Length: 142
Picture 1 (cartoon, rainbow, N blue to C red):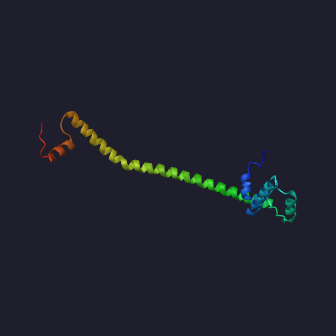
Picture 2: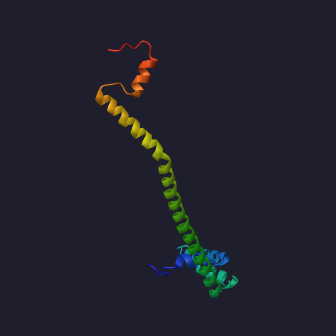
Picture 3: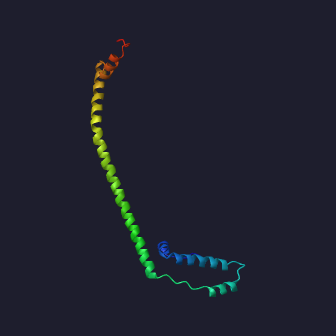
């Protein structure tokens, strides 16, 4: 048998005072014990008479605790959204700074590659080959 406890049952359960939740769990355990085939119904009835009544939780208190829990959850979610936006903005700005810092190196590399290509096409050694040739005394030009 299914029982509809409502969509907000987990929030209501967590908002209930601990002693009341403990009472509910103990009561469910007692009921399960009573449903056992070998349970003594008269002993269970005597125990129920002897047991002191547990005060029911104040519904207003539960509503206040639930509202406080929900406001804390929404504040936490808002903090996460702000943190994600700041992280995204930081990474975007860091990427821009890196690009700006790398641009001069890219430009110098392009110029060097262009010069090397021009020298290769003309058949004369490029600046890097000339340096290698002049520093190697065993090299014989062909």
